[in-house]
Length: 122
Image 1: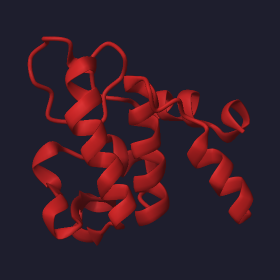
Image 2 (image 1 turned 90 degrees about the horizontal axis):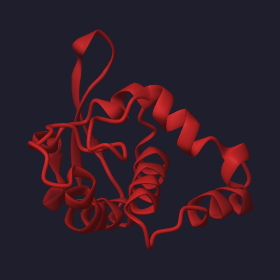
Image 3 (image 1 turned 180 degrees about the vertical axis):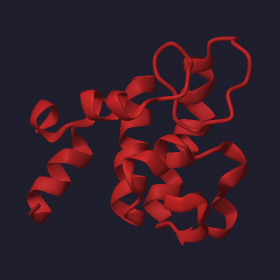
């Protein structure tokens, strides 16, 4: 992707809504870290070490690694966590996964592709 395409993709989500904040946080994390979709959807709250700009990621073969994350991605993750995630949970029992769908359940791989594919946003 060109820089202009990446910029358009980052600006596409409506960050005034909980789902838009979530989508922007996902874009930022994936762009900053190169995580696979499966790694993003399996990311749990206890694997976020945002004060150190690190994510603890479990990848293929259950191999665990620490991944540095950019300050802008940390900023968007914090916005999502403080503003949108609680709204998506909507009083439901706590879910360990970071990224949630509009029902307050863990986001799936299909959900990410459905919601975030470039052709629907750019």
